[in-house]
Image (cartoon, rainbow, N blue to C red; front, side):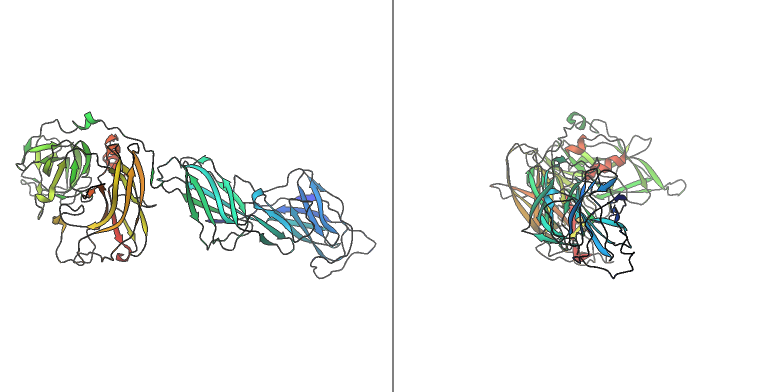
Length: 602
């Protein structure tokens, strides 16, 4: 929220009139010497208006226009005198001033129904920018300037679409829990609300587009010392969303306040997402048709360990899968005894059967490795065509300018089982386009955290790949496992001399699903809470390791089997990229896990 002081100045001249008298209806300052009684002194009045410092779509008054009218109170008999602006000056008569200094009070806009200075009616629904001002006048102070101030507050709302997947059609923006009428006292400069609180529609019927200047919805509202009970209801794409204004917020007179709201997803509703038809002919042959010639090397040595613990070990035929590994290169020149700094060439992943035969292979990818360091950029989108079965993931390396490929060894303590994947037949099971903590981005690397005893939401985009009726349940599981059917870490990641090195699979939330075949993408939400307070798993040196993950599992109606919701990688497979960085950026588009910790671990 931004509080913006209102500034500005406009000087106009006007001559105002009421009969000369010496009433004492308004507060008076101490008298000062006056001119001789036989000399008549008339008021010469100018005004200035405090302006807003921003350009607004509902521009508050910055200068008076032709035919604008104000009302004036002065002494007992000059009550609600009307004056009209002709574009350069005011007309309405002459005011003979009292010898005693007194206040003159002005208000805008004029109403003939007003007969008392303490009962100026205010109506929010008219969206009028009410002004009021005062000055001290008398025969010794005939040249008076009335500073016209804004009586109400300006509250504006802008919207951001961010990651919201819907159309972003704002049908209406409604303020709730506000007073719409009040009376204003010119002398005390106080507002008194009248009647019960109600609602007021401030705007609507526009599309939120983050690529364009934001549309501002403004409302001139009564100032409040606390926003308790005030909310904003926004109807987005046919669904009402209510935003509660924090009770500690205040709206002061003559100040502007801006709220920027980010649209939340249209949860538990179908959404329109672009489908990405992949080039099956390309992917079924990309990296699969060349002949692999294996060789050996006495100077380059490669080792690997598992590197995609988040996605799971089940892979479905004729779909994309994000295979990955952690790789290391050690180089040695036998002739000189030197160890080169870098190695440059290609790597590629393959699936091997129990006899070591290659049954599926994937595209070569360029890489530069530093001697003895972990390689970067070793995750790749792969299109799987291998027959159903269980296979070992192997990695081959080819030096730049050479033909033969060198098979990487398994790193110390890594077993064949640690690199095994299960290929399954094609399926109509649903998949995930993305899973996130509500209002937070999921990069697959960032660790999200929440207090043990708090409620939070996980949102997801379900992909109905088979275009079938989906009836069943989805549960969110916060898990830390080291087995092969759990979907976090492989046994080779288990370390010695650790603290709190426990495993668990805690269900943190569950929802039911009943979707028609026509629902292609579903934007859902799962209310979550940790059922158990866990302690931070640490290595011997006190550093946390193997961050637990949240996965979503699917159980079809009339089934007892929970199945990991895999990624829908069609969007990624359909993307055309030219650089390794573009390839890496694709990984942010589709994830089926979230790294998660409890708040007290930090």
